[in-house]
Picture 1 (cartoon, one colour):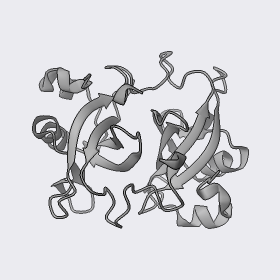
Picture 2 (tube, chains in turn purple, red):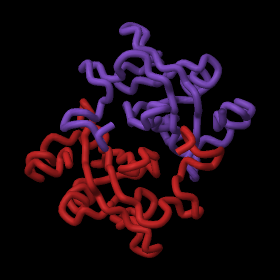
Picture 3 (cartoon, helix red, strand yellow):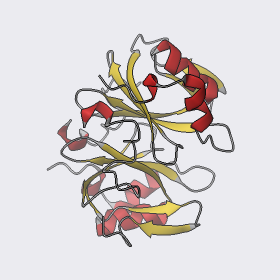
Length: 120
Length: 120
């Protein structure tokens, strides 16, 4: 399986990421087999490193000002299968196997408020 | 076909969006049939309204400080099929039919630098 950035050196990857003024990069989280977009979150450098190394979806909460591991309280963790950067290296695509649901509302995806996107 | 927010009143939808301090919201763009994540861009209120009304993917360039229509120069426009907000209404998911490629590098998706995500 091609794993995108996971096949490269972590330090080399981190050096390429264009973090914003706040030191953050948006992370789009997608279910590996269905293609469903599950959620959008933010990563600082530490959260990216933790995600890369632990293969658990790990993010940075802007409101709480700290790192969080998806599922740390709910148990709905994300097993990271691939990491990708976009062409200008300022957005991360995290391809995961979502255990349980991704949304705190109990929905599989955070984008299901008005029906399933693309029927996924 | 369920079109998400497109089935609602534009003004009511806009009133629900939590734009950030800069008046922007991130927009994740996904191909409707394959589920491939094509790109990430930003929308201000005007770009969201334009996207909703014209059904053409329209964004706000932070570097150029102006609205742009995807494909206005390349011809690689995006026909918008669905719009969704996430659970806290601070991210838009734009489900499109991408004409031609989405990335200025000539790749179908901006996230293909290290191989196709999820094999999509």
